[in-house]
Length: 204
Length: 184
Image 1 (cartoon, chains in turn orange, brown):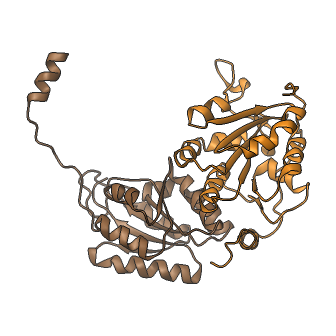
Image 2 (tube, rainbow over the protein chains, first blue to last red):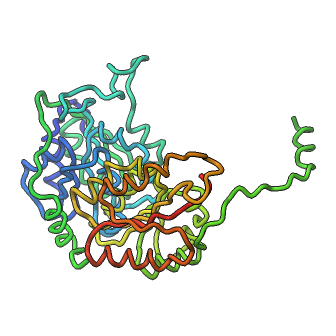
Image 3 (tube, helix red, strand yellow):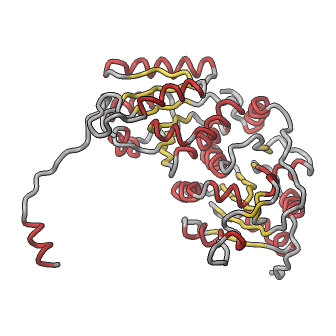
């Protein structure tokens, strides 16, 4: 396995994912949604914009249960993950084999001006930081990965996605200075209907 | 300590049944959800809804998704609906208060016609929590979120839940059956 080199960026991590994605649903929120939209579009993209912050993991759980034969990938930020930590416990209680959570960890609330999260070293009275992979393991995830290097993520991504889930992946990426929130790619209700058609749930 | 435990175990203490009865039995609820074609019950128990807990989990006709907090429930239900399932959210009104942003996003931003059974704490009995502010805020909050609800206060209103669910599904609008509860 290539060494971790700390050269992974948000856009590069998503490019690597996009290159191996086939017929999986990809749910993106916040900064991940903003960057994912620059890579093109796919009928099974669910751009979770506008979102209820933190709820992408729960949304992914619902889709994974409704579509057990299809891979569901959720790309979420660390701030969003922190906002709904309980969902990690809910997910492992149901243990959908087809669900992969990718947390893009930059340590800050990027779209609101890059304020540090309380899990970051600078916001902790006793120093140190919070290890989201350890939290995921403690919540019951058995497949847990962490990458901060471009080549290590690129060489492992297929195996990660083919793993029996639920799978938790932490990608350490630097914040993007001045980055803004994602713009909605169109009316949300219409996009929801189009997505349901694409996934074969449109006859409801 | 061992002696104390032995003494304690030997004393016969009458069990006090704090659980209140609910206006609907477990069988009635399981049958109703089955009849409505519910595939997943996204749920967090309270002392009233929790009386159906064993029956809900045992039912083979649908899957129970028990969440850690109610905000999750709306997003899980949204994902289920988008994936082609027929979910129902079952939470207490305190959980409704907690989960406002998640429900706003699902039923207003994405306009998903999610349906919920919401327990109305203290409506029938305020012995445990005199002056419970759930009575003050529950219905105004349902109105604020523009959720079409039916207040269920009597056992003969099971049909009203059924009919309201079907009307909401038919019109593709969200809805709530607001179920009066007793103790907190």
